[in-house]
Length: 259
Image: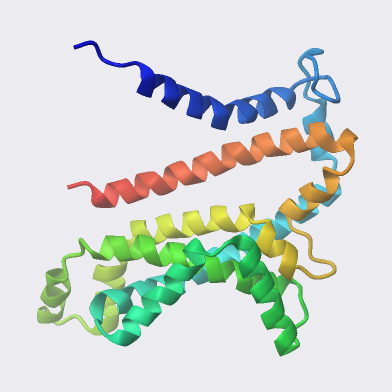
């Protein structure tokens, strides 16, 4: 029986739909044409303009600081939450799991509005701190799920063996538990870092005066057509960095799941 080519064609069409715009964006970042409608020769001048744009670099450092702080906080809280969910079975833990699952399925615009209303009700001025709290809110769920998946295959007899050999609780945690869970925790942290630095909708609602992330800066630059080639160059660099971080995260996760 002849094998049908229809699934292959559909898969190719879907991949083309997803990745063709990205390929065009990367090509236009090296295009001498300002509007990208036609190829006018290879150039690196858009990367030079990007390098000399202080506003973009300031926004980038703000985004990197927020992403680093949010991912580290989410790694700590997410690991503790995963331990609690794995070790204890109760009605309270079911509610706990539900609260951690909600950010995974809740629309970003709804989360952004709810967090803004929450901060306004408490009288908290919006700015760096509110963005950090908002990012931790949704990054926490992803870290928890990654670490929880690692705990499903964790051999707790190693913990019992360490305790039988005289190791204390903190010594067991530091020398046995954390080293075995480290790749999973780091993978969750890298995923949280990528989500944080890429977020726009939630950040748009909880931002304050004087705090501009990279996504918000790009949004404001897109209103002027002459900035589009610079945005293409910036997007190309961010794509390369994002793929590198995600690839590292997948490799760490696969290393832990491999027999």
